Image (tube, rainbow, N blue to C red; front, side, top):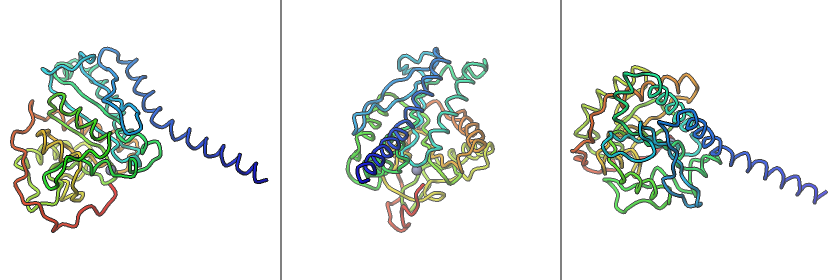
Length: 297
Ligand SMILES: [Zn+2]
């Protein structure tokens, strides 16, 4: 009895593990399907490996996708820092599909889109995504970046070091990171500071308000709408590089939410300037007056 129980338990564990490991494979096979459908505007490549030696795959979308074109306007989408927020990858795949449809079918957009180059990373935290776990190797990937209110270089996780290296390889104008579930479009600052408004606050406010007409989301700074934290990607992208950095917190991740939010994010990118911000340092004082990091978004 004992032996057969162990055998059954072992089979159960093996089947659970193989099911979980399939989750990222499913995303990769969907990326491959899209690449086969749109071979002239897509390329799949690796940005490097994580702590498990697994390649973090990205899709480049442009009219010349086989190589980086520094003359094009760069945009980046980084999803699934938190492996339990499964809709983040779903959203990103839908946004990619909608973008490719625009490249393929709309000649007017093709003229504008012809000047852009997109780097899409549907899943950054691969082991977390396979296990539906927020963390990667026990730590929160979205607290692992340097920032204006913390010391150190960040990057205790190799996935984060790999991404930070990748972000230096070209200029990105617009950045999106995808989480759930608040129903908000937020922008810097997201740290605990005496002044949550960046010097680009008015521009961010205007652009996100227009984008939110498509999905009815709440807009504002990440600190004011979500909560304050240190070491998050969305502040790093702005603070370090001046990227027009948006934190998307999906509302519930159902198909209608994803459909309307894909349109909202397209509207966000469509409104951006051709270059990053040039005044993206934190002016306010770093403070702990706001109790940080209360939630799990
Ligand atoms: Zn999250």
